[in-house]
Structure formats: structure tokens, C-alpha cells
Image 1: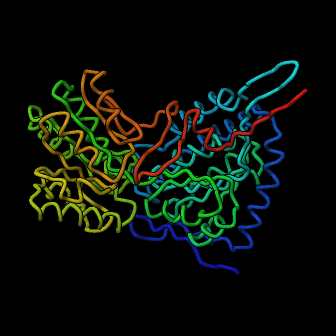
Image 2: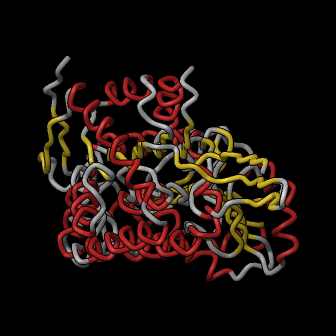
Image 3: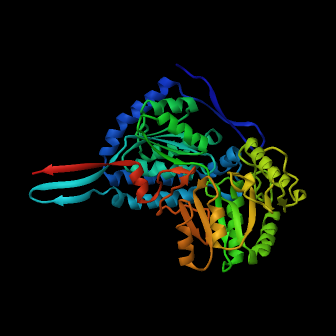
Length: 461
């Protein structure tokens, strides 16, 4: 069976096709899998030090491509060029995972005696498929690509159609560094063919970052194959500002967490709860910050807010916002400040008050530049509201009391608890979620456990 369809990246900047690539046929895709399996054997036989060296060299080479990458990201998914690329985050995560590799992959020695040698080793899965999203296309891919390669797997990367060129940059960098071409392959696959390959047990591990529906498709494709999956799906991350919070820091950080990248962040802030005594001041400061944003062409250096990655994403946020207003919410940002809002991909930011959890905007993922702010009486009410969501990725708590934050954090249904910060991945900590946000563990030592399996050795002398 041969497929001749193409993947088209429609630029949110002007609606034109910015890049187009032909998808692989089933035969060509299976050949890629076969080459990856063969190449993985020699790759895993290399020393850990050599694999780390080659992978880190690839990351360094990727950094030399930043001048080309930054405008490409603006054209592909709309992020303003003023914010640069993602190499700082890529380098931080890659470096930390390289530092953790020896400890994370070291055998666990149970016994070494005259009678027995007993130990548990970490074995690479073989071929790892990484299905990466468009919103932070380099950092999200690197989260799995780097530990998978270092651990001795071969990797096939299927990137989002909205960021078609990202995988090509990664492949050229790794290959120039000396990572064999069949060990890291950038592939263009249709959704249907991706599911077929998974159902055929083509991969030992699949990591997917994307929508809940996409994660469900991955699970359905893997059903009965026992293929291990890592899934980071939707989010509706809350912020909670307590009475002893540093108000200015809370407003600056939470609003940036809600609006940066046009709100298209996996762990962006989508709802904020503020104790009654600080509510009015918080809202006033938030409105001032958002009103000063500049919406426009992301290739212009003075623009702070670019278009959403696709017009249909903006349409979802507009509809969700309008439904909230129709149900009694109050929109605080003046549309006259954002004449560039074209009804398409260019979408003005918005702050809503008088919101309730009967409104979709406070319970369902928005993934856009809108945030609802609610007044709360105490920790009990805030906890109930924070947990009133299908998702559980991060929560951001604002207080001077670490013990209070930790105690409350243990009761929040989430993967990560922040105190006095938000919207950040610490590569030393596990990146994980619960509920509809998915399952699995990325980064940290546990990230290596995801891309390997345990293997026991019981040797009687």
C-alpha cells in the first residue's frame, strides 16, 4: 500500500503554506523501522561515555542553527522572534540528562559473593518513537530524544505538521555530530500509518505529547501489543494566590504563565484563584500588564504576542470566551487595544472575572491567551476548585509558607507543585501528570527508567 498525501504547514502569519513534505508509504516506513532496529544493536554496544559525547555534540551543533530556527518558528507556529529560539532550554535539559545518565543507568547490585552475582540492569527498549508537538517543538522533543539515545535506543521522530522543519534540524545536527543516520531518523508519517506501525509492535516505547484525543488514539493503537507508552496530554493548570503572597511577583509570573506563547504552553496557567483580600489589586495589576501587550506579525521585533498556531485554535478560544461572557463573566481587556485581532489566527488576550466552574473556560483546556480569575475565601475552597478539572499537570501556589504549600500540594491532583513560580520544567525533577493529562515520567532519573526496562541477572558461580 502506498500513500502519496502530503503534510502542509499552513503559516499562522499569513495563511500560506510555509512548508510541505510527502508522507512515507507503509513500505518505506517499515524499512525505516527495520534500519533502526539493526542500527540500534551497534549503537547500544558503544560505551555510555561515547553516546553521551555524540549526543551532546549534536545539541551544540543545533545551537549554531539558531539564526535560521528563530524565524522559522515564527512562520510555522507564530512565536515572536523577540523571544529567540529554544536552545537555552534544550541545552539545560540535555546537559542535566547527560549528568544523570551514569547514575540512572547504573546496575543495581544485589549480591557479589563467591556464590552468586545478582544485579538489575537497565536495558534499552530498542526503537523509540517520539511524537512531538508544535508549541515548544524542540524542548518537548528533546525531553525524550536525548535520554532515549543516551540509554542506547534508536529513535524515530515524528513531529507535528505545524512544525515540519524541526525534525530536519535535529537530524542534521545529530548526524553531523556522528550519531548514525539510522539511529536517529526524522520521519513524516500520517496519523493512520503511525497507528498501524504501533499496532504492528514496531516500537519498544512510544512517547506522545499532544491532545487527549491523540493520546487515546495511541492507546487504542497499542492495545494488546503491550507497547509501553508515555503520554503528556491536556492541561488546565491553576494558580492560587494566598494572603501572604508577594503580590507583584505573583501577578507578573502568573500572567506571563498564562499569556506567553499566546497561551499555548503545556504547563501554562489557565485559571487563577486569589484570596479575597488581594483580589482587586491582583486583577488591576493583571489588566495593566495584558493591556500593554503588542499583538501582531511575530517577525516584527516589537511584537510581544503573535498569532495562535492555527485559526481553528483561535476559534476554539473565542467560542469558549464568548460562552463564558454569555453566562455572566466579565471581560476586562478592551478590544480597541488590539485592532490586529483579525477573527482568524490573530487573537487578542483576555482576562475574565465573575467566572464560575459551570463555565468551560474554567474547567476545560483553552490553550490560548485567556485566563479566568476567581475570588476564594480559603485553602479549602481553593483546593476544591483546583481539583475540579479533568486534568492534572502542574499547580502554582503563592505564599511565604513552605510547609503550607507542601501540605496543600500533597492534596492537589497534579503532577508538579510549584511554589512562587510556574510554567517551568526542572530537568532534575520528574515531568509527569495524572487524570486526563496522561501518564508516564519524563526527565530526571525516572525519565531514563521510561526509555529502558529492567533486566535481572541471577548468576550462580
